[in-house]
Image (cartoon, rainbow, N blue to C red; front, side):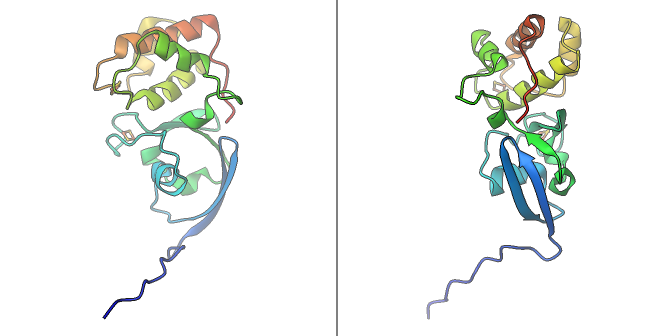
Length: 175
Ligand code: FES
Ligand code: FES
């Protein structure tokens, strides 16, 4: 006998209502307190630009900004972002989808191969410049050291971030 389809519950017992901004979008969700911000972005909001590498805070692929500060979203409980503005790689390009100068600099400097780490590198790169930590190659390397690249595109990544920093073209992204 056929088993009737069962409704998938839309809320989890113990879930918490939450409202926060993601780029230019106001999001209102019931969150399981165990959900990471990374999983909410990718699985519930369909925003797959932010990548899952290790899911353990080791690789930086999942880097986003919360109120302008970079975090690894795999270790950030989604409930913690209530009332904040989250900026992801999808919020970096301009209003007409023109590339941000740092995105263009990654292309110009061959700063990617497979591209899997690139969204996290760009989010960290933007923060690194805004923090004033991209004024020398050594400092840029140090402050981007939490972002791993399996393809070894580090030379181009540092060149892109340093070039953008020197030109003062990494204006704050507001989301
Ligand atoms: S996926 Fe978050 S640090 Fe690796
Ligand atoms: S470009 Fe492939 S992991 Fe960085």
